Amino acid sequence: MQTDQILYDLAKPFVLSGLYKDEKVALTDIALNYVIRKIDEYNETMQSLTKKYGRNFDQFTKDIKNKASFEQEDDWMDWKSAIEMRQSWNNLYKMIMKNAGQS
View 1 (cartoon, helix red, strand yellow):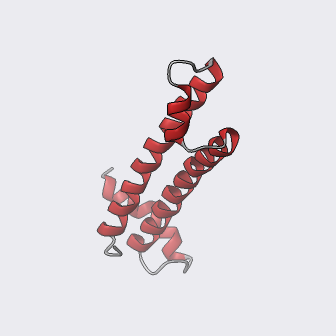
View 2: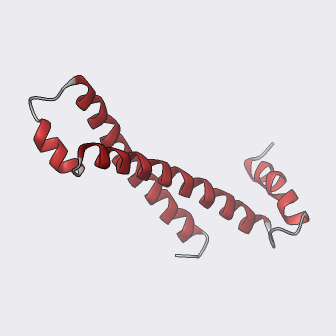
View 3: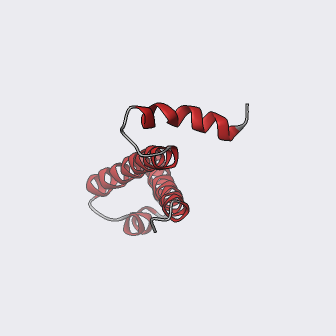
């Protein structure tokens, strides 16, 4: 089965139910909602670590350089990953908006 057909088949019930005017709008909305949830997850991780350490990532990085505990190293990796992944999801959000003609 072709990818286009699979996507059409997945989106069709949303259109038939009257929730969306067409498959493109349905898939765009579903994709954007998923992307926003992922961005929110990474924002929560970053906010939690900012609160835990009382500083932003750059300050935390400077403070623990060459003297980090194992917990701090783990948190640093989680924090750095959250920053990078949030940026990737933000970029994806922008691409979807551009492709949907909503930029």
